[in-house]
Image 1 (tube, protein in one colour):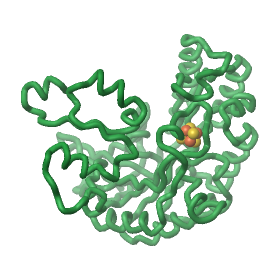
Image 2 (tube, protein in one colour; image 1 turned 90 degrees about the horizontal axis):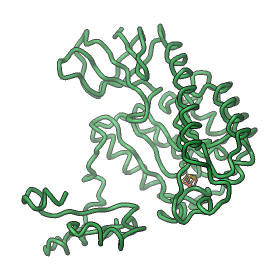
Image 3 (cartoon, rainbow, N blue to C red; image 1 turned 180 degrees about the vertical axis):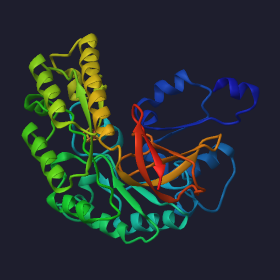
Length: 373
Ligand code: SF4
């Protein structure tokens, strides 16, 4: 970046985010070319700080106005943040320290933003928070309000698909499963980061669920919603993870056949309890365990994808290749940038943002190939 500043292409450099809150002093020393540092708790004063930097003044702080929100995820899909922070205190995670305790946004405020997004042509809303399933527990009711919020979002006519990500397993209630099952807008897609299967590791991680709870939850979702896509994320090589713990996790992944899975080798987060735990695992062991699960999942993914051949899905047309030969689309089974896509031969003229029906005719490593019907 300093190259751009020196050449005059970049006039001001502003850095903002989690790191600024945590390491401002160190960052200031190592990156003197940055003109302004804005940490997470200063976002509300964002515009004021910019004005101070530019030495100008504006009568109105309008950056928080939803009308003016810049959607960086294209013309069809938008993320909708419903809460900030987290109160789960998993021992490996620094988010509660960086972002603070879990705080829900008022429901009217979220619905107002969702309506504005719909008016702008957004068709798919992806509901996010550090812990979406706890929505409303701090503000309204200890049992949470995610089902009510989703039901209200469903009523926005122009929104066709709704998803929620990062669902903490212990808070996925029967009410929520039932709502997803009976909805024709909420995608049959559950993103449930389980992290591990071994009880002793889950306990050391300060997770609230046992391996058995997780297993029962997945069985329940699959029984109630047979076409549900289940995504998870795992951490291997957590301090104290024995060979037996790892094998337990491996067998669980093999048996469950998650549709989508991300696996991370544990890495120390400064200031977290896990960083000081005994039983830290050697880097090579962590890497080997991660690779072992990844190659298992690759086989599972391939089997899962091939099982879709011959099926028909509704897809959202998101883009077209430069040569115009293929549309890039997504079905309910895929989250943008996290999962695969569906490539569809351009056999009729379609608009970006339009829904279409396609039949799956082949698969690639992570993507589907479809034909319009
Ligand atoms: S891992 Fe997720 S649930 Fe756990 S403390 Fe971090 S943000 Fe919260």
